[in-house]
Image: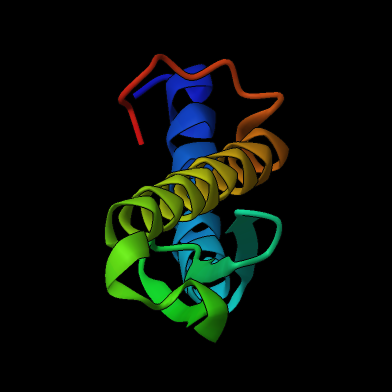
Length: 105
């Protein structure tokens, strides 16, 4: 293996170790989102797992069931979008200078 390829492999191994650490840290980090003016609030971790759902008791009625479902969907989808943004920002910090082909890591 020539020097350039060896150096690249060492860099790749270093990035993979950093990615493992980053994934562990992202599991501990959370994002929050709400809908309906705060009537529904959700929190998700960096692994796209919901960790909290809070619903204002005022929207808990049979008449509001459809609206409540829409509010929950909106809050969850926004939280998951924020997780994607958080993960992308961390990945950019980690791989910013390597110019690795997509899917390599």
